[in-house]
Image 1 (tube, one colour):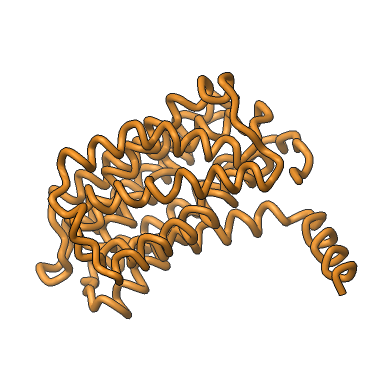
Image 2: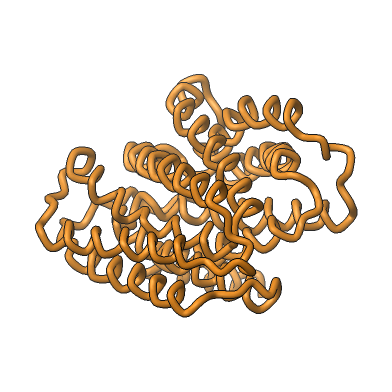
Length: 308
């Protein structure tokens, strides 16, 4: 039975679309995260504090269990991505608390647009007029979503602005992490080092600014652990592993599934409303970005081989 399981696992890992499957699974895991965040009783500073406190040993264990390790060279190469990851966590978690889940997640769908303007220089991709046009439509759709928020949706401009900051920082991290993966850095080792650097920023931040470090309930602990395993291990782990094989723009497009999942769950579980204009704006964003990525005609990137 063990032999059959090992054979099935090996065959599954050899599928040509295994990295796409991994990226989609990661996006689904990310989509659930905002629901856990929104339903916690403590402030965002406490959430990121405990999220990273649990994440560091968890990611380090995953690195060594999957054949990775830590080194001085790796720590040097992950310093900037680690700081960016920390800032993205701080702004991202705060934005979900300070505005509606629909706004916080849909604003992040402009990531593929930002990637398009970075990719030509970093990855040699060419930008065409249609791509610029679709980018404009996508940005207009996001503007509609933000400005048309219902008063009952929990949307606030301050939270929306934090979401804008988050997507800018996250895009920088996303592109840098892809560069490190293309350079051959082990995915779990990369994440472990990133979380260690993030702890250097997040833990002092949480300790100084949070008033709720001692106010965690049993439910909060359960949600924190769920976030560490779901969006953390499954989400970041699988996406980082897939990045060396999946085109950066395709990875961004797959990320569009995340706000759809988050918004649907917020409507079903948290009773957060969406106006007709917001729904229309969301459709404009998703359709524009779908056409935008469809315009991409980049050469296939070289594979690095499966990690054990």
